[in-house]
Image (cartoon, rainbow, N blue to C red):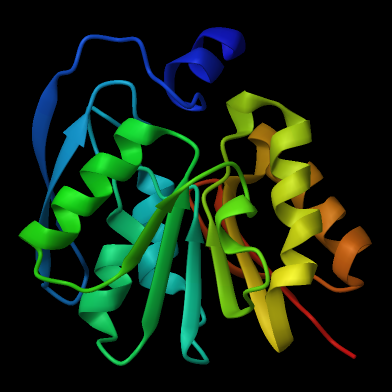
Length: 203
């Protein structure tokens, strides 16, 4: 099953026939956003619960944020709408995801930088104050471990990596690895088995 999911959305060129759905996201503050989702992209049928929790409970700081593995753009686009002064950068390995992230950014009238590429390849030499990830756990540990490990090279001092996951479905290992890489990690939110883990790049 995990291999099927891997082929389904953590691939550069999805082979599934294109289907498009209209989804809406309503935040606790009453703000509502609409997105077009596409087959072959993560959370095609409905907005992922962990994604919504991450958006609502991030510890927002700094100016520049990277939404890594952005899918069709929910996290980065919503953050830009909620925090207009923030510089938002987004990327995904999946070309279809990037295409729809660009469509959704235009539909939601936001200016964000969206690039296609594996992990941090599109962001060589760039550093951010925050990196946020809803990791593709089904793609295998090598993928999410690379996302966490290489985050150190792309964070400013005092910058944070914030990752959301189901604690008992891979999240515990993610938290342990974040602590191993950064020397610190904390749970900043817990809800329905989902947790947001935060590590800070310290001197």
